[in-house]
Length: 285
Image 1: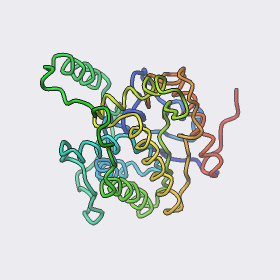
Image 2 (image 1 turned 90 degrees about the vertical axis):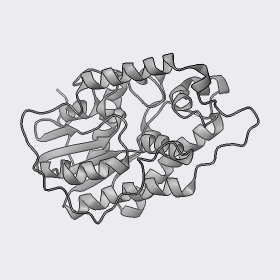
Image 3 (image 1 turned 120 degrees about the horizontal axis):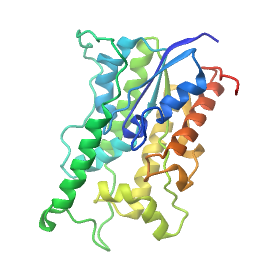
């Protein structure tokens, strides 16, 4: 097994490491599991979608010359897709695979945080403050009881399918091994309704157009599309949505992790890469 020069992760805040310290995010913990033969770059950015990650990968990350790129995508695409369906998200669409990469050189200096955690903390606190100060008349109501259920627009869901496939194809064009992972979460439709609502609190707050049933439908739908892309493109799939525990000790909300959850996720990704024949794990010390 050759030493990997670099292993890069794309995704949103669930890759970046929401509410955990530097070094506790699962890509960092995976790097320690894989040992010194692998350099790991956490390129997760809060709020990122496949639409933006395509340009980010093409123009920036590929300049790092990675051997493997792992795509942990789907949740933010679901969120942006719901907003686009309601006419609230113009900055989301289908990527153009025909455009050449930017000629701007990538400055490699001291390793950077992706992005800077103090700035993200400021954003997070500010967004909560905005919500708290928002006038009741300005708030968008959720679906009324007995209202018509939210239906996910097939054309918008197809954007995610196309964009994720485009990311995979971009890797292949540049001799990089793509790996696709489904996004994990503590959501569980088999639980009583009150417990489902507690676990789906983030989804129902961020996507007020959804009710409990449509939230469960959307999470399952975007995970299924992720699996379909991996199958159709013939690339390794790490089905974290199935493999990851639902134990609340691992989660701070529906899809973000505690340090314990980050550790468990790192172990599952390491095992998935090993099973795909892409890495050898360091023996336990």
